[in-house]
Structure formats: structure tokens, C-alpha cells
Amino acid sequence: MTIRIAPSILSANFAHLASEIKKVEEGGADWLHVDVMDGHFVPNITIGPPVVKSIRQATKLPLDVHLMISDPDKYIPPFIEAGADVLTIHAEAVVHLDRTLDFIRSHNVKVGLAINPATPISAIEHGLGLADMLLIMTVNPGFGGQKFIGYTVDKIRQARQIIETRNLRCLIEVDGGIDLDTLPTVVKAGADILVAGSAIFHAPDPGRKVQEMVELAAPLSYHSKFV
Ligand code: DX5
Ligand code: ZN
Image (tube, rainbow, N blue to C red; front, side):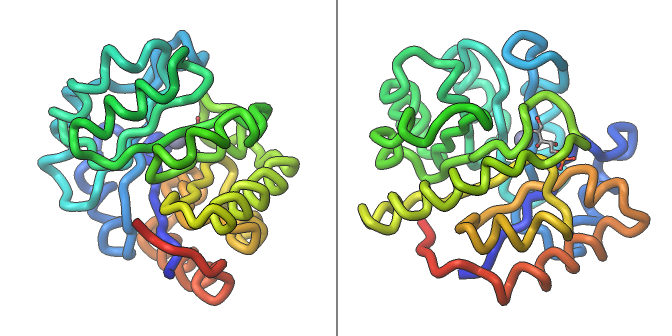
């Protein structure tokens, strides 16, 4: 399968979102990654459902909405109504993981499960069968432009092995510090979807950067299945 690139608009110019999105769309982006932060689960605040709704009208790309918020259950319906195609919650932010994942699925969108760098794969191993995607954070969530945390590569390998062994239909997404230097390592370890913010939107030509990432990733792609 081909690796998917999901540019994160967190590093885009928010005053010109539509044209920023157009650039990565033309460059061949597969998904659009939308970071939602509440100033509680993470030390930063970004956007809510109204902005997601406007983005929905500005692009046909699937919206990959990453909720970095406490008590996400409350906000699942409004984000789905706003147009999320993949809705990801953090395992650390919920008490009853199965219930939250099932709740997302009941709305007929793809179910994403995210974990922070220091959360072990074993903590969510049993929930993997309920998710369409496991998002392994490769930086501590909250900000764009942080340095990739090397020890997360082992977690990608571990997750890949579990998914293959159990024959699960769960994609692996990585998020944080992904650029042309770190890309080969995460792709070889088993990542299917690469989120990149600053590497793409701070590049002089974001569309070209997406293309470069696609081209670099394609031959390294780990054999895997898609949902
Ligand atoms: C970080 C966000 C990321 C962020 C990645 O908390 O979840 O999606 O935008 O930014 P880069 O690619 O710059 O590390
Ligand atoms: Zn993110």
C-alpha cells in the first residue's frame, strides 16, 4: 500500500487557510490533519467545530481530526457534524476507552486512537481491534515544530507486529517531527500515514514538499493492509 501524507494545518497561515490547503491538495496530500487543542489536555489552544466546518467546505480531502482535549466524549458529535472523516481521541484523555471508541464508530466515521510518546503500546493493545487507526505521537502533543523523539520508533515496530500477527485492519499514523530526515525511519518501522506540519507549511513550496515526501516514502513502504 502507498504511504499517505496528512499535512497538519497547525503550521499553516490561519489567515489564508483555504489557499494553504489548496497548495497541499495540489501537491498530492491524501488527508488533511486538523489539530484540536483545549489548553487543558495540552498546553495550547487551537480551533473548534466552527473552523472545522469551514475547512470542510474548502476541501474535498478527508479531514483527519486529532482531538488533544480532555473529556473528548462530549465533543465527538459536534466534530463529526462539522465534517470529520477520521476522529482521533487520546487514550490518556478517556476513562473507558472501549466506550469512547465504540461511540465514535456509532457515528459512521473512522475511529482513531492516539497515544503520547511515553504511553506504552501495551496500554492500548486490547483496544486496537476497535480502531481503524493508531496514532503514535512522535513528539509530546501541543505544538508544531518539535524534535522527533527517537524512542517512539520501537513503538511503531511493536504496533506493526501486533497488527500483522493479529491480522487487524488498523493503520498506523505518526505525528510530530516528521520531515525528509525522519520519514525513512518511521516508514520502515511500519507507519502508514505521516502527519507533517512545519516540514510542509514552512517550506517555500508546500505542495512540492508533499510530493517529495510521497516520492521518498513510496519505495520504503512496509507491507500492510488498508481499511
Ligand atoms: C502536535 C500536533 C501535530 C503537529 C505536528 O501536537 O499533533 O499534528 O502539527 O507538527 P510538526 O510536523 O511540525 O511536528
Ligand atoms: Zn496532530
